[in-house]
View (tube, rainbow, N blue to C red):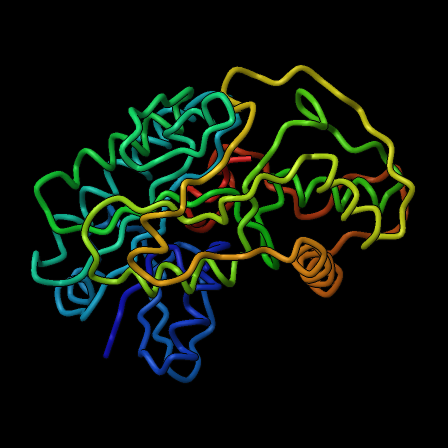
Length: 322
């Protein structure tokens, strides 16, 4: 069985590719960032909008397609960001939809950000009216609308964490700050909550949902306060953390929480996040990569890509609601 993963060099794309290979699948990974080919993996370095013949053939002939590529991040600004989001999230998604035959199972990664946060502490259900608060969320909702009338699996993941997390996401930033002895930048309040999902379990959920049409949340159904997350950062790094609390921008939801009943009904399980284990794995990954966090203070943060599609490769989309 041969499957295609777009955004295979991104955060979730890497975890999904590893899980598929472990399950015995042959994977064709498509990304703008070069990847090393290895047993079971064919790496295609290409942009989805460049009419690459090899990419087109892979999408047309695959047994299943997982579309994760896009421009990630609910935050960010600067000239051209709206255009890049539309290009990478909407137009590229439309190209994939057009290239994949209707008979082929297709998964499209949306985002929990389309909900605009949990309402009055109630978990967000797939049937809830979307309330996208920013350009990123509106683009993901536009991508969902393109899927109407097709038997597509649309996943709405909630804050995903673990090894390889994007450096502009809160947990990555906090680990870097703690290691340098700097305050942890907190938007809004330490009592805000996030439904934190282990990247490995998120990948397993995506695989379990292959061929299941409709919209499905991927989360744990349990909110974690930012204070809990900061406590895990302190324990893992051994740092005595301090905070710099700032007003949250309008695109930041107060809380996020997944209603996981549909996921459990379809797969028989829901992810459960061991917060300390996830943070330990993420920190260990940072320390063992070329752009790892140094112990010294006062220098520029290494490897931190600014939000807004500045990274050279396709990053996994929709997993940034934080």
